Length: 630
Image 1 (cartoon, rainbow, N blue to C red):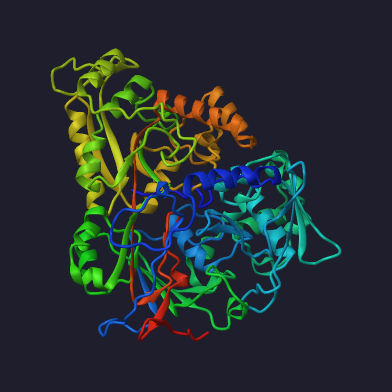
Image 2: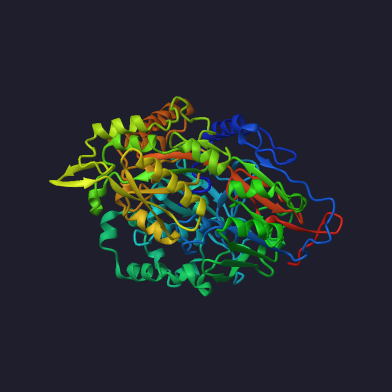
């Protein structure tokens, strides 16, 4: 059910005046590191742990493979691997191996960390300027260094109105310009238009690109950031910019392996559609020469094979046969069953752990714009849908209790979650009353409610769309449809292939859909999903939610760094969303993490991706990490 790329470090307060505030929130919630994880007891962020440390196996078993290849199980492939023009979570998983960023997430400390830069930026007192310095080591595959010119080009390419990356535009709005330091070729300053809680964190989703490869004629150098921000300029873009963007947006840069480039330590060497994606470690990559390199610069496996499998029985068999080395995509039932097997526990570390993700059902609040019937334009109807969704039953049946009810757009494990919002019960009688009040009644006694709309009788029969390929998701959709039918509402469930699903929801061509958002530990920027402007310009507000008040709250929350002011506003926004019910909020499931004991460094994380596959180090006999060949 997972879709969307709601950013790894979704938002983060990083202005100098806000760093103490952020750290305080993190420490209050997560405390110190955990030393070890023993047994299979659930580990929660609220247990005051920041990650799960799995010690190396004391013995290398005779039947363990000595091949330095990690086979990782996942359930869906990327929509594409274009450096800017993609949306899916699987795409981001791959980018962590093939690309590098100015800053990224520190999974161990639940904070930001420098990646291509030497240190986190120095911020000006007004929070509008951020000074960076690139590391000396990073190189492109042709041996040339990563430069400030590459940084400037990358941000201009992201900013360019002709670049097909609408999902990213909202996060780039605050960037005003980038100035190179004339006295140091590796230093630069990012100047921002306003204070913004993501003035640094937005860079965690911006893969730095090689200017000479993606813009050999240096077209973007002719245009300023200010021009690229100008709507009038966008409408009358010069021909050379149009020509550059047409080439840059070419799908070949996201699908043809010959054209996919990055300065990460791995290269995509095979991509069998809907089956597997193979990453091979580059020879003599610059990270291999870094002294005292961090876990994020590591590249121990010779290959990382991302293998797609959506059949729970087949996945379980592959795990038992040790044909898979790692997964963060098992079903709850699948892992519970595996943990009953002694041989599985002998060969694998496994854990259920809290996440910052949640699942929901979105309802189309602006259906007329795409010529669909107005089933969910009345908030009483939307509330009725929530009352007809057997969420507690679903959690117990399909998640064995290993999920937390959601009531708002903020995950319950966050400190600013509005605890006054109570989960709605399954209440068919109350749902019927609300539907009656909204004018949906069964006038012809066929057990399907109907209503006169524009002079025509419309039966309450709608399409419930979900991502196909997962039997559990299909079963959940059937259960929901069955419960709704008890109140005279007919939901026709329809599974849609992963990429087609994205296209469908982005174009608002749905009645109701099942989806999920990935989040993280930090402060949220709600604009991408909840601001009304993000419905019109192909953002992620697929349902069309938004009022003047919620837009004002979202705009304000993007710049407020004072917790005493911000938290009440956060809770007010949650309360409005709760009342308007644009989503049926479902649950925040726990991540199911599995990693083979033949690898050292098999630590597990609450943040995505849950495992650092690049840091898995094959053990030698006796539990000593083998030295990789670089």
